[in-house]
Length: 433
Image (cartoon, rainbow, N blue to C red; front, side, top):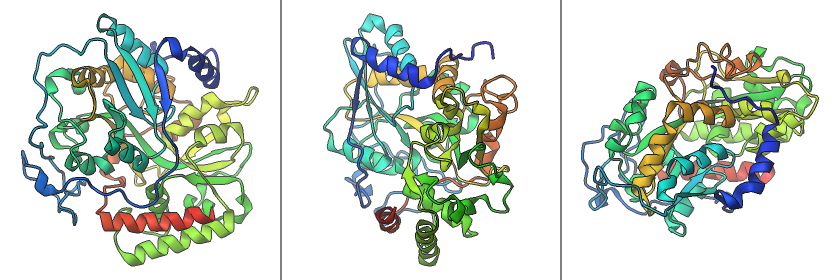
């Protein structure tokens, strides 16, 4: 790709430089990073909403439908929360407040949006969260009027039925046609009433081959590496209950990573506690820096972590030592994040323009060149991403294919009682980590 961003300096150096320059360009704030224990409660019931179309999924105990690829859902539009009118001008002198994971959007992309809307005197303010329970708690509190959220579909029902998210007016977002067709009518948000896609990823294992010369992917079951005593103290799992429990269910021979079966969950809990005793894993979401820097030798991670990890390598260490494995046929944990407009925000028109901007081909690809997480854009061919220079050959396994969403295992929204069981397992695991 001739327009692929090139990096004359390391990503860390640019991050440091950007941080120094922030006060004159756009504001960065950070929320608390402690993970709440226990499942968040819904602030509204199904009876509080009127449906614009019937949902085909079975409802949970709270009446919120559970969306899945087999049971797609078209969410209701709550009374008084209809889409904004068409042909409105962006709000002038606005502060557009974004809520996102750390290091999950490029500063330059945000600054360029400000430049593009300079006639409206736009300022962007970015706040960050460490996990989705924390994000949902902060959004519900209403303490900050966030305009745009970078979120995940296993919390979408809570956002809709909690009246925390705005339905979209599609006339402001014509660039959706450049995204994969499957995201123009996703199972978790039929007719994309509330969301547009941001990134796609798999969950697997990352490592440095100079520190762990074994080809982890050649094992009969690569997941077993997390129970291998010879790597004790050198590895980590993601600080995410669903990802770790899901991986453990797959390692135990199951395929239902959203299981409510007590026997399946009990076996996962026992295996996770056994993992603690055998390999003493750390719990972190910073594998994208820890593995390249050698703080960790191996970690459960998302595919985008290893792609961006090449920009965190110490001076003199070749990024060709990075490795990533997930099931090569796509039958592993898979997911995507989306962009949405939060109801508490003060700038819904500008927020629509921002969603459309992030779906602009050049912007999406430029952002990918920074964050390492693949946007589901038609212009980015998985078959040529290595040849075109987007992904190094040693990390070709981190490329995500659209057809994998037909065979992979997404982490779905859970009924509250089941979510509480997952959180209880996670609390017990983290207490010993």
